[in-house]
Image (cartoon, rainbow, N blue to C red):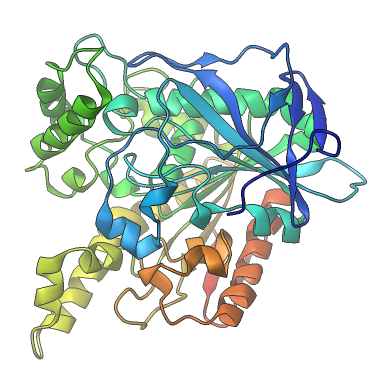
Length: 449
């Protein structure tokens, strides 16, 4: 992604309640990047950033929050190590606005990145929201939040849980307060998130303090099938983390996180994503109340939820042992296909359908989708994250990604534009035809009942 180098004189400016924001122009959009929305002491709730008394120079990409690298995922997505620039103690977001006149406030889409609550950042090149904003005439906000041990484990040693989720709530408050001054409609805000980000979006619907901050939720490939019955695993993880001092060097925190992850082993599929939201800790209800909470808010939100056809194929490819199994003559490929189908249903598809049906039966508006793009293409197929190259980034952003190796640029652009159109159609009104499909064999959707 190009770096911002605007001159002070011609730089775009927004006069907002947060202060005067100075952005930069980038190929048809205005960027306001790396805006600090909150500060956060380690193991403490975020504190909203007060209004600035001097101009905010929003011309640098949002830094990532501290995290360990995952080489296999970097290779699949084409993320390069040089993109990593970590910042602890500050929380940032970036806003992308079409650089063209508007006759009315634009819909706002807030992107919550995924990465198993341990990986990712708002401004990774593969998550670039420029095509979405430019093509579809919407404002897109990308949010960074705390990860791993610093953001998603609590309830031990007097350390609060769900800090990363509280970061997102703080970011939504910033959007609600400031987006009108940037041309957006604060009454038409859609959250869209992938994987852990989709899981977060679903739980922000029932989090305290989010009432009135967003109207629609697009929940992509959320691992809802492993979001419950995690208390024992979290307790064991907390025991391993308790010896870590609040002021330990960051390098020690990240090393401890690895040990904490290993402590989660033995809890089945849940241990594949050990960090996550924790029920019964602010701002979430107790686990036995969560279904009632979602039913209670159903009429407040339009929901578009779905999965890919072969979610867990990504993790099969990332595992050398499973790839060796896959290569066994005659039995390897069928065995792996059966395993992918079973785990995709268990972790993703089954609970996505349950979520949509519960929402609809409680009076809410819900649609379900299934993404087939890439199915049959070795080795990933229609795997977890295959929707991301269609929705975000540009062909050059994905040039190093194993995920879409050998997909030609024209196909990626054409199919991506169709999917982005569907996403923004839902974001504008919360409505889609009762059923339909994006051709050729990209995605199908239907209304939940």
